[in-house]
Length: 241
Length: 251
Image 1 (tube, rainbow over the protein chains, first blue to last red):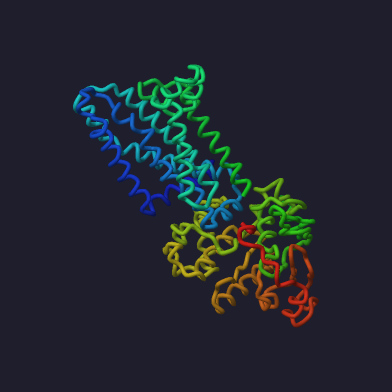
Image 2: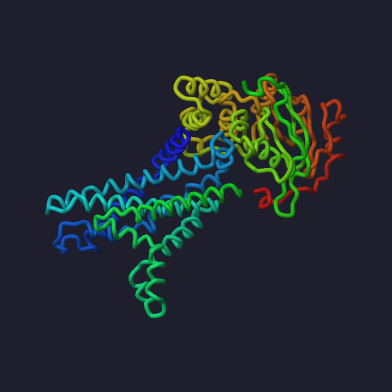
């Protein structure tokens, strides 16, 4: 655990010593603001909830999370520091988990900085803060799942752009599998059981519960297994360097 | 007590081989290095020097054969073996966004040092590699010589018993080369040092023994005197110039 924290500390610090962190935070907050208040019609809805806020997260994260995570391993490969890291007396798992953790904490910081939305809802009305909390928790796990996939694609290449594109495509599949316009198309030729099975692989399906304020262990298990599987695959990719 | 303290044999390599696809980069190498030895690893570009070093340090798993460092098998007990090794990779990789002090502190922490011991280790490495003047500079602003010495300082930070240095004098000016050679010689008195080079004077200047490798095989080894003089003629006679492995294969 000590080694995990040493790696995570360095990784998190490197976000803030480069412009990456600040550019990312500003863009993230601008986009969440735009989607919530303009595109999501936060005020016009006339209800004290954060549905307009969380509903966009699967799409917003689709671009932003790979952008935050694409350098994790690609940069180590490009700079040659992967060799340095892998010849230190640490296990590959400690390095993988430490780097993932640092990025996840960074995304958590970005998410925490959206607190004015919560304040706004509480000033204007009396929202159910339990539902809001569940929404934030779900959003954090959603970001974690995307991030773990980005870790995997980042470990495959020394080129950050390739890592970015691959992870966007992979995450897009995880959205579309449960996205209503897509499942509606499948109704014509597939059985409902088949559609449900496909939709069960989607982040949207599992994020829905959190938005309604339900913290279901099955949804948690889903996100944790996406994270676990992706990080495990990362370790295999790194072993076959 | 660790086996390394009982034994002066620090590195034992037996029939080590590494293939990349069809290409045999290292083809059945065996040698040993004892404490107090400085072994110069000579060979043309692409002869398998870096690949061998990467297997000793546990970065590449060997295709066949074994590496034991301080009695520990690098594949079976990687953590124990890695603890004994200080490694300067080719091209002196370092995190460009970190300061020299931050980077050395990070290396010290990964080596299990903290608090006063960490500060002491960083200060000692900084002094030894003449890094005082760039301590707070970020690594991407350093000249090549300083970056090289920063990475060398990282390799020395935990006073390792085994030092693996891949082209430690590459890209340094003549004064810096001289300093690094002297440092290697001094370190060699108490440690087992393997360094690769293709500069033949360095063999005379710093090595107790040289190993010449060509196309993945050892073609000669011995003290510089045993190999014969002049060294560059011996080297040319023993090696074939056209052995370069394409970069894509190396990586």
